[in-house]
Amino acid sequence: YFMCTAVSLYKLITILITMIIEYLRHFYGYHPESMKMKKMQRFFGLPPSGELTKETLAVMKKPRCGLSDVEHVGETVRWKKRKISYRSEIINKPVHSYCWSQAQINGEGCVRKAWQLWSNVTPLKFHKRDRREADIVISFYYGDHKDGSPFDGKGGILAHAFAPGHGIGGDVHFDANESWSFNSTGINLFAVAIHEFGHALGLPHSPDPGAIMYPPYNFDPGYEPQLSFQDVKDIQKLYGELTSKRPPPKTPAKCDPDLSFDAVTELQQEVLFFKDRFMWRKHPQFDETRITLISSLWPDTVPPNLDAVYQNVWENVILFFKGKKRNKYWVLRQLNLEEGFPRNLSTLGFPSRIKSVDAALHFRNDRYTVFFTGDECWRYNEQQKMMEGSPLLIEQQWPGIPTPLDAAVFYNGFTYLYSGPYMHEYSLSTGRLYRVLRNNYFLPCSNF
Ligand SMILES: [Ca+2]
Ligand SMILES: [Ca+2]
Ligand SMILES: [Ca+2]
Ligand SMILES: [Zn+2]
Ligand SMILES: [Zn+2]
Image (cartoon, rainbow, N blue to C red; front, side, top):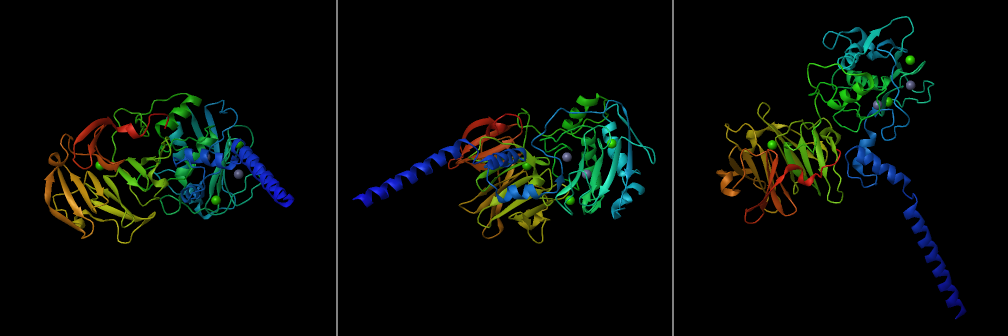
């Protein structure tokens, strides 16, 4: 009897201790790491699960700027003058130093060109000094270079810069171990220079994925690096305005009442909304949706300004369409492009008059896909890999939708067809139109 009591007492105490620990863990930290992770996931437009998912790891491993993104401490400092000098000091002469001598970009060195982007929109003037002391010293360094932030060899951190100030203030360091280039073969020096120069002028990182001050490296061969609307706004706050001839590109906003989508698709449990170079990811477990770059999930393989996207669950692939001039489609398994792609649209069985598709709707259970082109829709049999019969009129299937469509998706047991700033909700079985909603219905309007 005594033994029995002792055992249950012991058990009881163990249970109590476990409960206390759980309680403490719940309220304090346990999760300082996971909180940090969530913060980071939010910053990069990932579902904020707080867990180190494969995708989170991929984002963390992306080449990037060495300055911290999430915590920006202290006041912003700026240069208290308009004429700023710089000097390019190429210690150890990395092979890539040809940037400085060769006139690669618009007949100028890429450094000069990068400064120009900032001086185009502010009253700032930058001039190069070869010998005398300069405000901003630009150098290439290998590994530890005695400023407390050693470089990490090829990949990872690409560069860092110091906020305006004396001495090392304003200086810009590039990791000499990177394979710097002017195109997309290595790391594009021009793109990184514009970003680092922003720091040298006092700008922190921006959570706007369209901004040059967004921390991960995201050079897109089809998109010439330039300041975004947000970059211009931020730098002008520090130094004042200078009206530029060309308005800077604005990152699409989900609160914009005129917002339309290029494409919408399901992907596992998520719904992805594509627009230009960007996308929003709607995860059923999280209310928050943040904008992110398409290239943050599918690096380099998927082009911007897509026509249509759908996931084929049976074959575990996702298909991207982009037409008019290119008239192609891409098939990705996991995050990798399948061999032989992109392929011509006609290989799916479209007649030659069809140069592009407006939207695609994949019927998972019946294993076919409907493609929308103008006021017609085509039924593609995914099992037999062939187009079924001739096209039908969209209005016969889904009455009330203005054509051409922008996008189409199944979600929560409904069919959603997008046209302009509106989304049309249809019954899955009868095809009856239930509601006409704003495009951001699934992307609650809050900042980003
Ligand atoms: Ca590096
Ligand atoms: Ca300096
Ligand atoms: Ca479209
Ligand atoms: Zn940075
Ligand atoms: Zn350094």
